[in-house]
Amino acid sequence: MKNITRVIVLLMLAGATQTVSAQMTAWASGKTEAITNRLNLRGPVPPTNMEYGKYKSYEVILDLAPGLENSMNIKKAPFSAEKFYQAFNISGLKKQKEGDFKVKYNLTRFELVNDEDYLQTTYQKAPAYYIGLESNLEITDKSGKVIYKRYTTPKVCMYVTNPTETYENLTYKILTDNFYNMFQEFEGFYLYGPKIEKLKYSDLEKKKKSKSTFNVDEFNQSVQVLPTLVDVDRENWGDLFGEAQKYWMEYVNFQDKDDEDLAKKVRFSANYNLAATYILLGNVEEASKYLPGVKENEKSFLGLRTDFPYMTTLIEEIDNYKKLTEKTFTIEAIPQEPVLASYKKAETAFRYAEFDGEVLDTDSKVFKGKVRIISDYPELVDLRTVETVSGLRSMIDGIGSEKSSVRIFIDGQKKPEKTNLKRVVNIKDNEGRIYIVGKAGRGIPLVGAYDKSSVSTKRYSMFEEVKKGGKVSLYHEFFPQDDYSLKKPTQDEFFSPPIFLGRRKALREYFSDCPKMIESIEKGAYDFENKETYIKMFDDYTAFCGNS
Image (tube, rainbow, N blue to C red; front, side):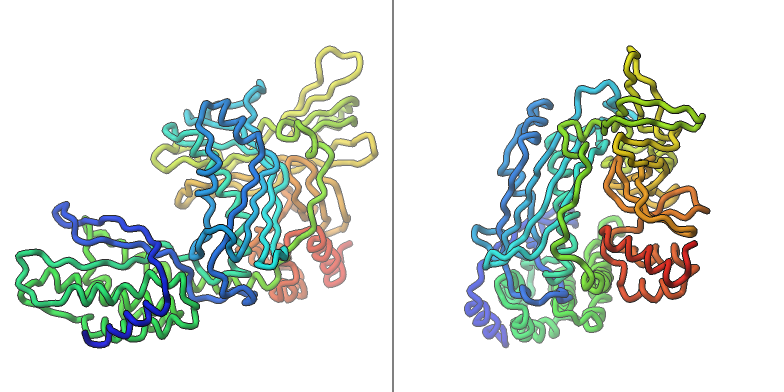
């Protein structure tokens, strides 16, 4: 059997068990052609911190707030903590009890707002839900040492879904998105990447009527090298692939006049396996040599291919992951726990902020009393697919929220004074803090492809001044979020750069008038998303280029 015997021996030494799932695939004539097994692996780019590079498993521990089950009872949706447990996964590692990493997801608060008069139950004829959550993520190593933490401060959003979507599925989507948003920096810091979930291997079949003498069983043995990888130390992958790659090389141009259809499958599989294994080894240049063979021999459906485009994209993702890990050199693995405004700690945090104070509106009128700012126009998260989205969506979402309602309850008045943040200049609380009102966030682009998880974060917000400058000032957002922002007097909107990808580009554009700031940006001096980083940006800009 040529050199495949050595491959089988290596598999036995690895002691691996196949854990991948099999699914049937068929393109031609609606008949089953092969059993295709999906691989759940991680790419070749090493993490920033190699201390845990050999970890192969993880344990998930969930602590779900009672409000989650309560909300599902309101919507008469089934609740199963086990289903949520199954939804939280780390690609390329095994989920098991007493895993190498212990991943604790704490959903500390969850609320479906369903009894306020301002609620929109539909948006562009699609179901809408006002949901608030607070959570944190903590990851420990084998010794129990905490190595990573992230926080989501209390926040309410309006989620818009397809009319056919169930509330149960919506909660899974919200929680898993929240988990992965907090988890993403961990990947670049501690895990090889990128995650690879669509590579596969195929067991070839020879039709009963085939006259070919090609040894299908021998070829199928060669691909069994692939599902073992989760259990094998990465430095041994090259040896594991070696003999199999030599074997596949013999079949990249395979011809068989007795069964041309089988010959094409063999050529495809040989080229595919070589490209895939070289990708996994990080040898993108060598992998690219076999992509034309993948494209030429891949079966298409109505002229469309899936494997060649995916492998091409995967190579691009490897380059992107390298950039991601470069940025993680500057992340804070364990940031300080956020300090919450008092209203964020209240039971009504997902409904409104309330305190004693006074409001100055754009007509120079002042109202004193109990001020309530209502979360009636929270951030909109549109989860609809393109097919169900109105043509006006891009325009509307690009505008963003314009008017969180404000009520001032004045002693002696039966009804409160009413306005909205757009018409407010500033609000002063009873402790003397002054919050100015302005526009922050970003909208969905007016042109370009739709993303079913697109988010419009444009909003009118209340800001407290942290540091004042003539060219740039620093502010902390009090309502509705907890962000820090910069503002130039020549610009109407407050500025917050992206938290991770695209952050340096946005900062370069914002500080384009200060060359020394650009140098610091390129060195990663402002890659952290926290109060200290914003203060450093303000102080450095003042020192480098003046701020008066």
